[in-house]
Structure formats: C-alpha cells, structure tokens
Image 1 (cartoon, helix red, strand yellow):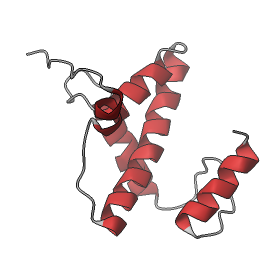
Image 2: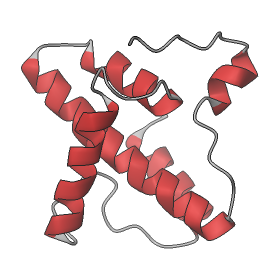
Image 3: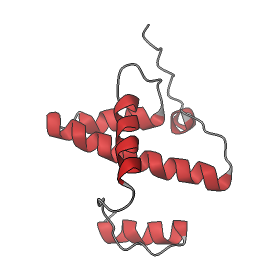
Image 4: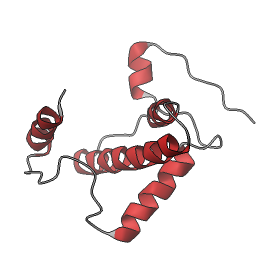
Amino acid sequence: MTRGQNHDRLELEFDVPLSFPFATKAGDTFLRHLLVECAHYILSPNAHDTDLKRWGLKLAERGGKVAKKRAAVAVARKLSILLLRLWTTGEIYEPLRSAARRGEPKLALSS
C-alpha cells in the first residue's frame, strides 16, 4: 500500500481529512513525550506480551540504535490510534487479539 492509499484509507476510517500522511511534531508536546515514554516501556522486557509489543520489536530488529528509536515512535503513534479507537467505540482491549486470530501461542512472561 502506498503512502497516498494509506492516507485515503485513514481519511475514510476516521472520517476526518488528514493534512499530513506522515508523523509530525504538531500537537501537544507533553502528550507526545508521554506516548513515546509509554512506547519505550511497551518495548522493554518488563512489559506484558501484546500484539503491539510484538509488532514494535519486529520493527526494532531491522537495524541498530536508530531503528529502536523509530520503533518507539511508531509504537507511540499506533498506541495513540489504539487508545482513540477504544475510547470512541467503547471496545474492550484485547492485548493478543491478532495473535489469537492467527492461532499463535501466548509467550510466557519471564520472572
């Protein structure tokens, strides 16, 4: 899917015209920092196993230190979209929703 197609899909899904199809530094600075901090925790070994963590760790494997930072920002963005979706629809959060659909086993937490 190209960037333009993704942009169109997001406009249709959220019913709001999006002026930027990519990450920007617009918006509340404190909230952005808080989301990135949450993303760092989600990607840490201490966090519970979730689809979001698996996706972020897969992104972080693609390179060195820069890839880990990019993965944290990507997870923060996806977390904000997830929180908005849960808030507006009232759905219950399922940490391993897509893993359960694919039949993947749950990973044991290390203690």
